Length: 124
Image (cartoon, one colour):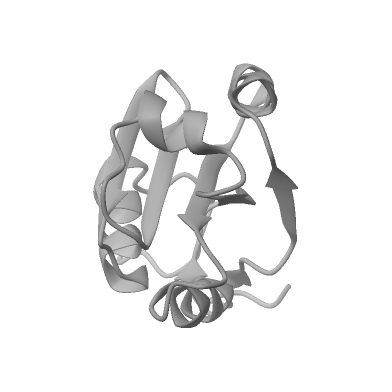
């Protein structure tokens, strides 16, 4: 990847149960972004597309969770409004974002996981 370019979040697996999500978080050595949504939600599909174009310098594992197929996930994390995102940052930091946007996800990432990948864009 050329210097200064960004990685995109396009590889999306899905989780269908709370135990799958807990397994994924236990094994995560990088940021884990869980998009919680529903195909019936008019905001969720565009949110997923925006996440596909989210620019980041971070290595991120992104998964999708259908709120209606895995209601124990929404219950466990107190999710009441979609679209939502769960962010696990290495070191035990977790963020629950409800009724959120890709730009808010990017903002939380930038604040919680700054400079996690070497870049030549720094001022010397």
